[in-house]
Image (cartoon, rainbow, N blue to C red; front, side, top):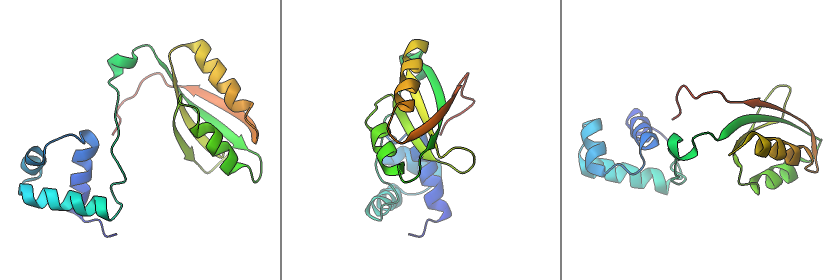
Length: 143
């Protein structure tokens, strides 16, 4: 899969608003609608674009607690831990990382008590050795 500079620009626009019309994207990128449409189809067909998702406006989750939960996993338990965390809807993202921890999860819940419960559930998951949490105070930007 060769991703050109034009493809990167197109992906950047789609990250901002995946529902933008082909005409709007074409205007922003100074390309024809046909070119934009065919590039999107090619990127989908080649698996570069794996899907589309919903970003919830901050106002809809005003007051929700967001935290990065760093997780150390016992040897040979990564797949089971990842599957268990995937089943928790409060875990919005899970990343494998280098360093002192094996995984970093993004947890989003309505209250501090719910975050306490989520981190306890994650810590009690078979294969999890320990967790450390960092509450997110603000997002400077997200793409």
